[in-house]
Amino acid sequence: MGREGPGPHGGGRGKAGGIRLCSSEQEVWSAADDLFGTRLVTDQTGERGRGVFRLYIEQTVDIAREIYVAFVLDRTTERIMLVASAAGGLEIEQIIEEDPDSLIRIVIEPAVGLQAFQAREVAFALGLDPATISEASNLLISSYRAFRELDATMVEINPLVVTGDGRMLALDAKMTFDDNALFKHQKVSELRDKSQEDPREMRANDRGLSYVGLDGDIGCIINGAGLAMATMDMIKHSGGEPANFLDIGGGASPERVAKAFNLVRSDESVRAILVNIFAGINRCDWVAEGVVKAMHELDIQVPVIVRLSGTNVEEGRRILAESDVTLITADTLAEAAEKAVAAVNKENAA
Image (cartoon, rainbow, N blue to C red; front, side, top):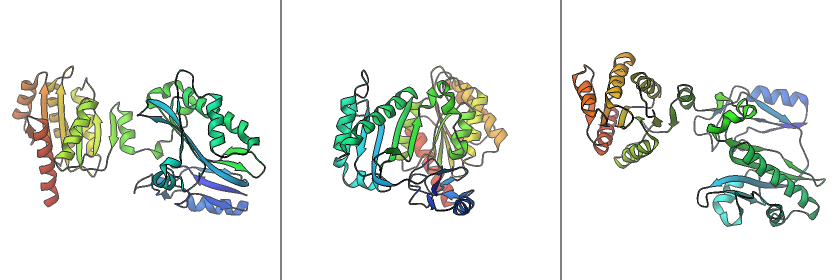
């Protein structure tokens, strides 16, 4: 009758039992009952997996061939690249790892877009029957147009199948979008399923903070993306693991700093918090006030390491020194990272 697949934001669902073949309506109901409310763990979801709250039911088709096609941003050429493989389906990750030279790659010139001759070239390289070359070419050009017009960062079709009667169908596809452009695409934005997102990142987004969750145990509160990346590198260099990337931005008021503390504290894996601020348009005294405010209001139970530099740094350090909260201070980034790692090691030993 059809196949049923849950919709977590991660591939590898087939291997994890997330795709069921059903031959009757009763089997569809039974499969849905088994899947709803469970957590699907695949190679791409991590150990925590993703909850299954939606199911997609589609009719089975007679599959003669499975093909892999993707449009991705290539950082080396600074262009959109069309990547295709004559072998798609469940084993595409293994093929990419073991025989990357078997992939077909076409770099697309942004001034003119994907040209018809390039699409035909890919279709021929995939070994498609001449009768399907035109259909495959149109499908590739349409996919590229969707990539550009919807401000996507990736379009992946796997599998793109050739049916027994010679038709081409995209049986499964994955798209990612530029978050900063979603305001232009309401229909895409309405499809957002927050149940599939990292709850930490979702809470940060709702509070106007830039946050990316990681797997370490040192929470980071930093202003500026470049400084945040440098801080994470220094933590790694010192033998630690960052728990997040959190940029509080340039105009960090005490209230904004307190929100950042609350967000980092909500991650149960965090064993220490490192605050690293280089104030330009920001002010160290504001940040210091926010740190003290957070320590008073949130009952922070893990060590907090603070490094301040830049505008009003002396006033900021004075506020921290005269406060009644327990803090570890540092003058340099290297010193702050070393103290954060040492604090975590001490916590773990205890």
